[in-house]
Length: 394
Image 1 (tube, rainbow, N blue to C red):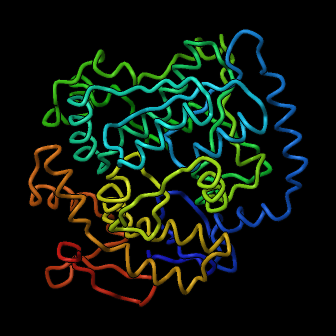
Image 2 (image 1 turned 180 degrees about the horizontal axis):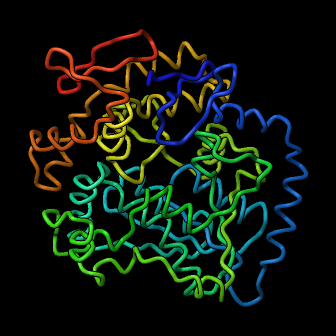
């Protein structure tokens, strides 16, 4: 199967965010993004105000906002607290690898928004073990972060009996057009498990779970009691409180670059102070220093594209970049092996680069990669067949 590329943005047909192409070769992500120009956003804002009014409380928090301290977190909280006047409880999963700027932004939220803030920081030893297991099991050392982000806020909602949760944008809809803006999609346990966690759950990382998966060689001694933060509440617990997760992007025209300008001006939010190795953007993923580094490199190894493509797609759709400029960003960033980032992570988990490369190769999709003259090569957007030596590009 030949890899196709969207004729409007730069996404490939084999994408981590499932998408389709129409008769003009335009991907579903671009088509759904175009819907934003036809939406009556004033009406949507009224819908949001009416919705949250139903959840205002005289004796409890009105809403829970899952936050990482990023630009989106600041914008969500700005809308909820400053524009809607809600009493918000901020909830954070902390995966231990924040950038200094990310840490700065996170801890200022409590002050600039005058909110209570719960931060859950799992054991470092458990997180390191989950890094190793996730990498070897599914080629994702940051799986623990996806789990924590989509579990801890729901746990807090159940424990404190706060039914309404405000998420930012639906990532799979924003990138790949999984849903229409007319669907007004809400958060579900199905999305968490099948999409965000790709079918795995916390118990798969315990010794018992790895035994059941037929991967006993990956056991790290993790027990159920080591992963309490990762355990999703039962349906009965959720139904008793009436927990509901809505996406702000269904009610407010979501353009991250504009939001970033706003939160920098109003709240002194800081972008990354050092350029990333695999993307030109400095405003995304400050809550884990490896997200834009080797985590994204693993996506490149599996699917043949990375953050250079992701961010170029966003900026092309927002009218900030031409497709030709986007292709140049893909060429410049997607194939880079992030040595600076890799060195830190290898030391963090106690692994050699040779072992890392060998495990990476087991996750290469044969629909993308082929071996030629001892090198892994693939077809690229800028030319039909361009060899990329992924072990030496830096």
